[in-house]
Length: 168
Image 1 (tube, rainbow, N blue to C red):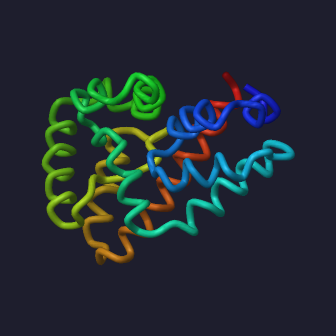
Image 2: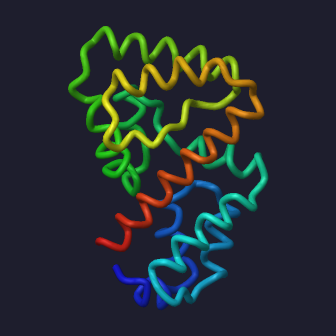
């Protein structure tokens, strides 16, 4: 898909495409309303600018659309629209040692108990061990700092998914 073809979609068609990139309904609405985009660069910049203008409630909504890192069953349950992208993003998890998967599952539980949302990380290119180490490190954050860190990671994921969308 090109920016031009994205611009020419109906509002409902654009919603579907943007929802594949980010689960925050206000982000989807604003991205759709900001069309037409002049080029790829404007699309990516606008996506980031809109993302960081949203409320923490919007960020939390987006987080609910992600499978837990290392939870293969959670990956399988995600919608077909984003499932293949999520699987690719967490590719290194699928071959991970059982012990690291158990450690990730336990740390994910601790993280959710501490912060109230699942651990969000741009998993592309990271090993299971690396993600586990980052999860343990981020458990030390205060809730406000962690929410912002998770939002920054969500932005990275959204940017990657927009790139995937444009390469369809």
